[in-house]
Image (cartoon, rainbow, N blue to C red):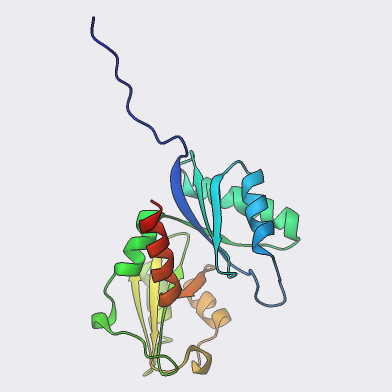
Length: 194
């Protein structure tokens, strides 16, 4: 009698990275142990945080990233008392974002230039991309790839004339940004613990 073979499933679900906005900036001080506890209360497993800027790795059986974003945002807003926009990426998506060769492979020089990755919930429309590109000037460049964008500045980020508020107005949606070093370290963590 033939045996029925079920497809193998990971018991812990898909590995994700939640990139949280407004964590430990602008007077919102949050302990990462508290964030991990909130994720565990949502039923996620293998919860770990990476540096105190709101980077959380976790596993979930849910494959709908928009549903995960909404679930996390609702929990954190209720617990912290303010909105925490959440941007979900799979481990593979984080590794792709870190490995992407942008701006001809230019690497930032500490204290002299910067490369930042912005994470979005949805890909930008052509109109939004044009609004962002209009900000560029001579010292800033932007590249867009699906739900991520890359921002190169030929100065220190703190010296850029583009503020977060101005950038979000051009984007027409919220974003959270990480410097390329942080994204690459997250990708390494993802590759080691996939």
